[in-house]
Length: 297
Image (cartoon, rainbow, N blue to C red; front, side):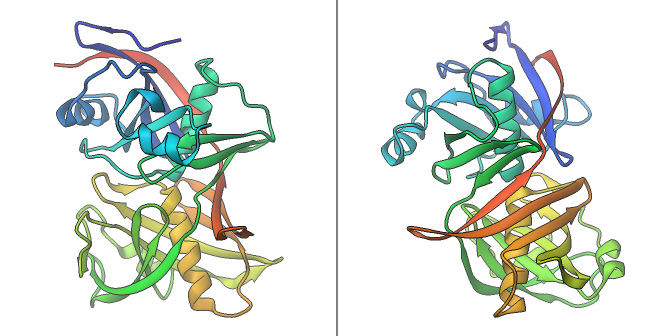
């Protein structure tokens, strides 16, 4: 089933991963030309479909960014062309790529049985997506945990130190003392991060569970402000970053498997060794909610 554009009318599907929601549309041949205003109109919660981001399903061979994906992995036939709610492009989306996999399958664009893996191109590089009995798991690849920042946010009485984490897109993770501090945050406005990376940053606030580790699995609770989208019910790469930061703070003996509670549900994060170093993987559900059409102005 391919997207049809007729007088600016676009066919779409709405999906979400733990409440992190997306508008998806199919454009395999790369013929649909939507600018930032068009994408923001689709994501608008009052005048559009409403979502944290917009995902175009396009073959890697049919857009400029896809050349790098194919050079990295010729098997990356499909590219996840992801934009934030404000229409700005983003490197990766951990919840989005799971929903993207579900969408490709539902549209008949991809055959993927439980246990099978497919290479997906993104602006952050090629990602390996595996279908599981409960949804999907994506290998986010190598990660970087390094760099300090100070973070100010509404609801915090003083600025807090944050730890920079890179998982294909940039994050700063801030540890809070308890649930009451986390609940008191107002993330309607973007936290102020110093120094601020040139392309902006996602900011996660985390609280460890008590006990932190249960049955070999680390447990944390998280809220997030995503650049270009605001506070969301979940952020997949943010959950990975939050788990990696907490694992770093916990030090030697910290577990490699983590359960991350977000306002929209729970996702899993695990660190595993590979031939090119440690990778971080994200697992969770992917739901397609409804389909329709919308006429863009």
